[in-house]
Length: 88
Image (cartoon, rainbow, N blue to C red; front, side, top):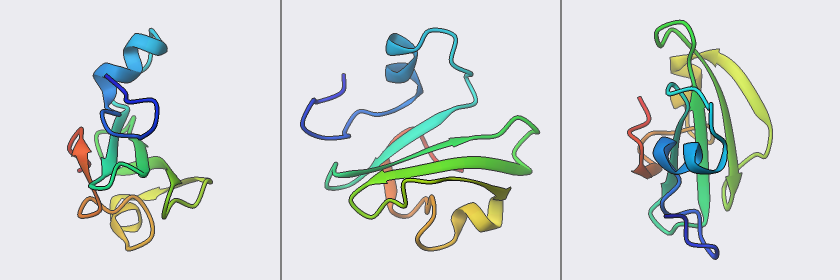
């Protein structure tokens, strides 16, 4: 369950409870501090992603591109957003 003062617990199963019908491909994860998050989605088998980062360290913009771009530092870096769904 999402703690209202942090982004800890953000993941697909939590998102589905507040937004029924959300794609099972949408992944969510927070950083270790719980003060930043990444949402990522791929509809083509993981070749390209749309992603959004918010909170501390986030850009608050929707981006789209190949997985390598999503992995880049400052984007939806899987080494930063480690709590929740596994960001590929």
